Length: 507
Figure 1 (cartoon, helix red, strand yellow):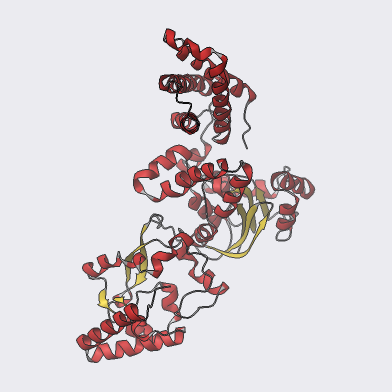
Figure 2 (cartoon, one colour):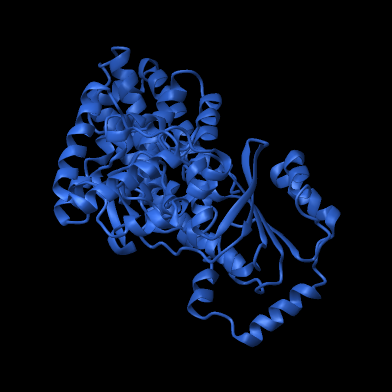
């Protein structure tokens, strides 16, 4: 991890002080701002300035950076510091501070920082060669791969287990080392232990040589995370193991609340939540999120982590919280899904089995965490079905959006499917492939003869177990085959009665 540079901190404070003196000297009347009365306020400003700069890693530059990096890592912390200063001025009724003085100081300091850091990164730091891009543009030949494999097998640089163990302890702690050694043999040459944030270091490994790959870096900091998982999948044999770690959204909340004083910690968490959780969900603000963060230090819920792993062809065999990190052990079971359009925003399209067994895209409002749709088999193995055919203790459902399900708000976009002709008003529920496979073959065949419906027979018959749900749907389909219109009319009013008077709600 890059460390802050003391020299940059000192220079930054000199720049801020110079900007303050320069702004105070613009007009004769503003010279009073150099008096002790105002210097106390400037001292508080400097403290807030440094805190925000540390939090957003302004002083952590160690290589040639893009212009967007400089703008983000300079402008963003400066704006946050300015917001805190403005809040203090109005909260403590110190409005005698000139707006020109405050905005002038921050503006001049920001411009000077941009100039200095541009010179620092482009003139004083040597450029790096983008080896990952070069590898992807010109991948190794078969001969190169053979040499790579031989180099791994016969390498004189193979780290002995005790030194590798020391490196793991230094990186993740003793408890994490013990957890990893419970699952892998560090002395086995078919075990690869790395600490990387780029798939380049994965792609350069020989195929099907390692039985286990362990990555010690948090996946929160890996850009193009799915591609990274896909690269690991490509290098492992069938049932090869992949072990990694992450910080979950809940762990992140606890860490921020412990790190900062009361009140300030909730302000920082609120800002963090807006930028890291809300901005990525909406198309207009998504570019702002990537501009500010470059996808680093992203917030991942436990459900999203597991969902991404399953989408990329892994099955989770064990998970645990160790040393403040969430560790997972997986095995490769299939090729990745290579889903180029994963559902991430508030409006989602879910793949469901429709008429003729063909897939249709059903529109809904998101109530589950991203990638949760890939976890149906995982949740089914952990928890049995409860009354109504839903999973018990389904951690995939976000608590803040569970009310959308209870009031059917999440299903309102399905009206678009009704107008498009994918669904009819009354009919069997459109099912995912996993749920569809739980049904009997006879019911599967009968279901695929007709379009699914917006209002399922479930709300008319109120079955509880999976067997009762199948019996209810079979009765509906048998009746629909004989008297289509009468069946639709009967089930519609019966379902409406249960909804209005028996207060039946969606789970």
